Length: 156
Image 1 (cartoon, rainbow, N blue to C red):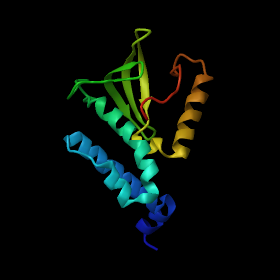
Image 2: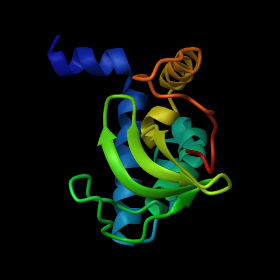
Image 3: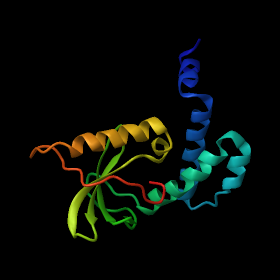
């Protein structure tokens, strides 16, 4: 069995199709093209519910804008998500994207970690993210970031 076939068997053909569709939807949103979600749902009826649930998260991430990590300059208007105003992207990793943000209600600077939209829809990744936050929240050390909360806003 070829490596690609083994990988597809491991992650599942549906997951691969789902990821491809979300990437295409995201690319179209970024390009300002119209997106007919119903046509995507019709192409893959077994994924229709997952696609519909993912779209608000994709749209919310698109509204955050793009920020150059090196310069911290926004390439378009930086957005808000929930109680946070995104200032700039700090970094990316296997679990998500970390932004410097301002918590609007308290007027403080925070690091805000967001899961990529595809990972948000995977129950294992979401559980891993929550476990990481809970574990970090129990720690108190000057060299470990404090966790003030976890949550979901507009599918993100």
